[in-house]
Image (tube, rainbow, N blue to C red; front, side, top):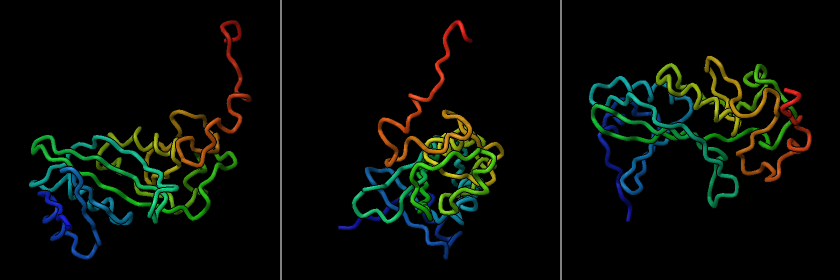
Length: 192
């Protein structure tokens, strides 16, 4: 038995973007809208600016690695959890990404070169101009998962160092690391 997703935003989005190919699903009362990467900004801006929706808050931004997931056709899903503080609505947006390469640990690349030399399949437009809360959330996903947010004003790593060369939350990253612990310089009280 198929179930139709119900959300106040869905009819408005269907009318506004008839040929975009938005897909909606519902699980336990939570509605997720699958948005093509090239339409993310216009859909997000509409959700924020439409007076009947007012999705004024980006609650969280995360990435799911579907490596080894049964039936998955894309490797990564970038998930945006949205809230309308005045209307008390919630909505999840998801953009699916498929890397052009293997998406395995790589040689060190500087943050400054990441956007220019990075995998085009992992590039998604930044929602920072729409929801400024995306600033550090996008930086975290770039650092730990390797998602490249084009148009981000300051895309650099948060938790690893510039030139680290890999993304530790990907499923194909070795559990014991790539030798970082062994090569990391120990700073003692006397040497600091």
